[in-house]
Image (cartoon, rainbow, N blue to C red; front, side, top):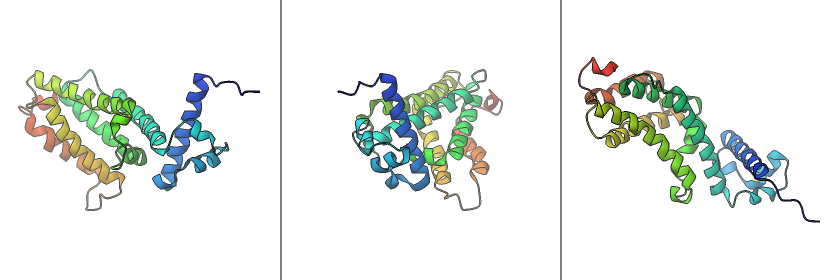
Length: 206
């Protein structure tokens, strides 16, 4: 007798279980330690079952990264002081993002790992990455439209993101070993990036 078809929710739940287990194994032993066989042993399921939900490890990790990005995006939305001006919001969100990387270094390493399949293969993952960046660009644009910040919003945000990403990556990799911690570097980094783009000291508080 044929096994009854799984509901959409059952499929979603099992994919989520597999993603959560993969992230646990990744945090414990690294990327290479995560295999479908080890996932099955970890969850106590058939060794072939993961293949019913993901074609290969790239597909699995794309789903895990998507989960990480969803939590990352939630942290940004929750931490955004929307009742404040654009500069205050950018400073606050820079701290939110750095604190997220600080609290979740393994997630952050996985999200921005150098060796990933082309994002074009995973439209949903690409879309949430773009949404997170565009969220920040929109705030930067508000500051430019108000005459508080100078420059092109997307260009400036690329520069800010590159600097913040460098700091977060060094922290996540345990490479901040030259006398300053991430906490000590956040404010100087923000001042170095955003400060020169502002009109005057009063406008920095808007």
